[in-house]
Structure formats: C-alpha cells, structure tokens
Length: 353
Image (cartoon, rainbow, N blue to C red; front, top):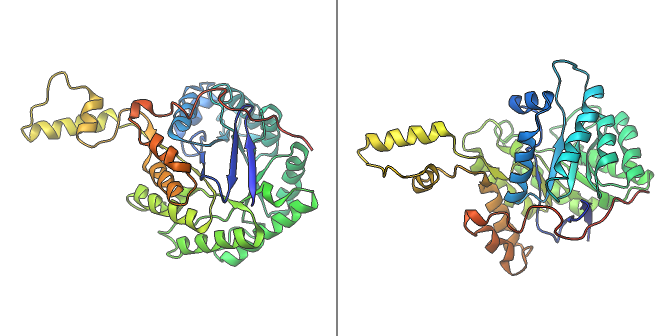
C-alpha cells in the first residue's frame, strides 16, 4: 500500500490510500493577498502566526509555506524569496508541530527551506518541464523528501486528461532514474474550473483512479480550483472533496478555516434585525449574536469543507471508531485541544540520502 511519509520534528503525517485524508493548509501564501504581501515585505509576520495556529486548530495535517512576495523594493524573487522562506519556516515550526510543505517556483527558495526545515517536509513542486526536472529532482534526492508532481510540461497545461496522465508518468519515471521511489511522488493532476469546463470533475476523478491503479501514487490538488468563478463555492467544494476522496485522492491543498464574520456583516445584520422590530438585549455580545442568527462565528473555526472531509473519512473507514468525527463535533471552545501546539507525538529528523 502506497504511503508517503511527511514529518516535523515531533509529528508524522502519512498520505495514503488507507489513511485519513491529508489536509494541507494553504493560507500561508501571499499570492492574491495584498495585505499579507505588504506585511511580509515590512517584516510583519503577525498574520502568518495567526494563520498557522488557526489552520492547525481547524484540522490541517500539513501546512503549506509559500514566500512568493514580489517586493516593491526588489522585484527579483531569486534574491528576496530564499531568506523570506527561511524566516517563515523557522517562525512557523516554532509555533506548531505539524509537518510543512515547502512551496515555491524558485529553486533557491526550496533549498533554503529544506536547509532549515525540521523533519521531512513535502516539497512543492516539480513539473514535467525538462529544466524543472533537472533543477528539482536532485534536491528531492539530496534531502530525501517527498515531492508534489504537477501534471504540466513544456507544452503547458493540457485539457486532455490522457496528456496530463502521460506527464505524471514521465515525472515518476524520471524520478526513478534518480532513485526516488513512486511512494515519494504526490501527483497533482490539475483540477480545472468546472465553470469553464463542464467535464472538469469527471476528468479529475478518472485521472485520480488511473494514477492510483496504474502508477500507484498518492494525489493532491488545489481543491478550490474546481469552484473558481462560481457562486456558493463552498457548496461545490463540499461535494467535490468527498467525491475526489471516493475516486482515490489522498490529500488536498486547501483552506481548512472558516474565516470570522466581519464587523461590517454583524452591524448590517443587527440593523436588519432591529428594523424588523426585534429588540436585542443590551448585553448581547457579538459571538452570541452571530451564532443566534446563523452567521457563523467571530473566531476562526473549521470550515464546512473540513466537515465534509471528516464525514468522508468516517464513511470510508479511515476514522477508527469515529473518534475524529466525535472530536470534530465538540463545542467550538474545545476546537484544536488535541490538534495543535508543540511536541505532542514522536516523529523524526529528515533522513538524507
């Protein structure tokens, strides 16, 4: 049975067909987050700290670390990204004990992360592009780490699932030439937006089955890609993830956290309630109010996607005696009591080749 081992200094995460679904938290990534990018350029890591803790509390098994900020003061990522990657990894692994996924398109940033990351991180990523294969596979071998393999090559991203499968096979075969086993390759078959391609869901389910049956590899994806551009994205994601799991997908890079209700939304709802003639108690706090009116919570908490994943783990017998499902449904105040923090279980140091 294929198992991909990812480790922090004290904890081990196993990606595998017979394992609970591996949630790789995506929030520590400045791409598309102008506020976070500006903070990082200014040396402010407060959002990184909050996102790290919140994602682990919500159930992330692994945290993805991306330092891809294009500095206004220096637009060259080859110079700015390696030291930033090193800084973020050192900070995050001092706060939480889950394994990390080092995510960058800059080879120097990947190696900088590998140099300071404790345990055995997941490297994200290699593609089927010849130059990328020659740059990244030696790093994978040198540090003896697993790697995400993205199914595009020098021709770009194909809409033909057979071509994407062929690219995945090529990467697995090239990795074998370096002595890297298939169980250390986690293939991303590339999820297309269902709004742009109506067969995107069917394509990825079929691809995942082939990757499992013919190549024997674990799989991952950027889960939210499936719903891009459509309304009620959480509803689509909630259906997609258990279906992908049923097809054999073993992990996803995703946001496990439901973001807090904003003060603006609370004010608007209170105004609507008062306009309807409902008198609110003067001592009613915001958290009680938003829960009473079904708005969510003023605090970060596990999102609906995590509920779908936990339920699917239970239904596929990857949750022994339903223990994780029961813990997940504890009151919000107890969330993360057994999930986060430092130094819970034994893991291991990274094993170099």
